[in-house]
Amino acid sequence: MKKKLLIINHSWVRGAGQELLDFLRKKKHHIIYIEHSLTEYSSSKHTMVQKFINNKLVYKKKYFYFFKKNTLIFFEQFLLNCFLMFKYSKKIDLAISTNCFNTFCVAFFKKILKINKNIYYCIDYMPKRFDNLFLNFIYKYFDYFSTLKSDFCWNLNYRMTKKKVKEYKINKKNKFVTVPIGVPRLKIKNNKLINKKIILVFFGTIKKDNGLELIFNAHAKYFQNNNLFETWIIGKGSYFNELKKNIKKNGIKNLRVFGEINNSKKIDELFISYKFIGLAPYKFNYQAYYADVTKPKFYINYGIPVVITKFVSISKDIEKNKLGKVINYNLKSYLLAIRKIAKEIKYDRKIMQKRIHNFAQNNYLWDKIFISTFNKIKYEI
Image (cartoon, rainbow, N blue to C red; front, side, top):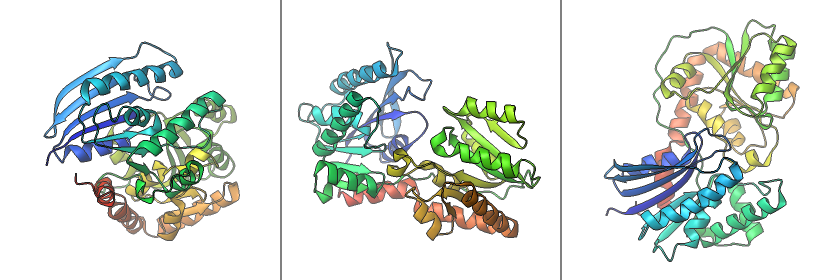
């Protein structure tokens, strides 16, 4: 039976919200998709509404923001949520909204708009989200209200659920479902290697919490004069300019910093054509602690072994299934892990790549995750 569905999402790069949309489009339901720009990171300054019927886009409209400051844009997005829901979202069978900001609107107007069921898809949670006490109070209240009033709460990992159950005293076990980050289907071709060197690659948001200082210091002290290694840093973020200045100031060799690469074909070609070791040496922070971080699974999907700090939840999978090395956040542990993986790559890179890639395709595919999740909540989609 075809259903009328609503998805509300914030977007910066492709993520869980877009993957969910693609999964549901294949079911050929009537879908209303509202996507806000995450202006804290994105250069886009608009909210987009799309309608899909039988997997075909039948309507599209953009609403450009009046304000320029991020805090005011969030307020504008809140008003847009209210306006767009009343305009497009009456008598919805199922509403799924990412983050507490969007879910608060859905849960608050649920009865008035005759939304039958709603799901809070919690893809970003921290006990302390903002330094500003007032903003943090609002965030915590929105998260509490969204968790309490939604029919289901999908959390990225069990740590989120455990914290919410304890803090909000919500003991309905059927409400919470763990929905980890997934990977897309990918076939790896037997490309010829472009370079015989081992490349230590970081791909993602360039900020200190993601371990960029450790990567820089390790390269400066041990890898810049080693002709067997290079370090590549790909992406953008708050530490990007400072990192480039440090490289220039200290005359660092064999460390290349690229901007963003958004072309999926180029990304595919790049990540199967080199001897990569994927870097994810997160410095402890609550965002990474409560998240199911995307970077390690991105590497694993290309058959790339990962170096990751042990406080991150996926580190247990990586250690148990020999997908890389788990480290403490220090130079000694980081270097030991690199050396061990480098030896394994030299022994037989192709076998390692195939084994790691197959693990990702067998365990982390988005479609499998969503099918399993809807089965758990006993909702026919």
